[in-house]
Amino acid sequence: MKKTVVTFAQAKEKGEKLTMLTAYDYSTAKLIDEAGVDSILVGDSLGNVILGYDDTISVTMEDMIHHGAAVARGAKEALVVIDMPFMSYQTSVYDAVVNAGRLMKEGRANAVKLEGGLEVAPQIKAITDAGIPVVAHIGLTPQSINAFGGFKVQGKSEAAAKKLIDDALAVQEAGAFAVVLECVPAKLAKLVTEKLAIPTIGIGAGADCDGQVLVYADMLGMFSDFTPKFVKRFAETGSVMVDAFKRYNEEVKSGIYPKEEHTYAMDDEVIEKLY
Ligand code: KIV
Image (tube, protein in one colour):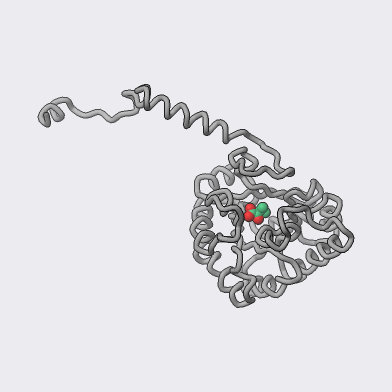
């Protein structure tokens, strides 16, 4: 059965953990869906993981729609959330609603995610008023990396922790049905989780969040440009892939592959006439 915003609300109510992984293509989405993960995030981490950028700033609406639609085709049960890219919602409430609508219509999202707290509450309210479910994202928000001056844990001082709590309450009040907490001290994430009626989805925010999200290429050991402290590698797929690519390279060059079993037959009489 397709997971929905109701699945998220019920999980919070029952104290059941929610799971979310990123994906950017059809085949990966299908595998994650098959594994029973509750939600697939088409994150703008697409910029780093798939497109090879240093950050998420250059990711466009077209990128998100293109990859989002591929994921949506592969996700039969998981709830598909597509990230709103940099400057697709910060510019105005109008832009936010139009672009969220495009992610739903053209990207076939079930929900959209956007970064920021109090300052984007009007956008969250307008998008949810248009009937589009919103996941908020606070703490370390990678689209603001230039303002933060690097990837740093957020909310460590009393003032910063108070701001994080205010942001969490503001996005909930604006209508978000869940909120991602990124790179937040575990004790603060626990407090925020207790204060909110909507589920918190943590990434680098400890075990007391209502759910967890990871970038799939990080947890599979496929992306090695940088590995944040919070990532657990559930497999070393990267080295398995390199090994397979090496064997392919060697076997083709040495004539081991392909063998007869990998080829298509043809009647000798036909081929002989062509010589
Ligand atoms: O873009 C992304 O992958 C994200 C997750 C890190 C939450 O926003």
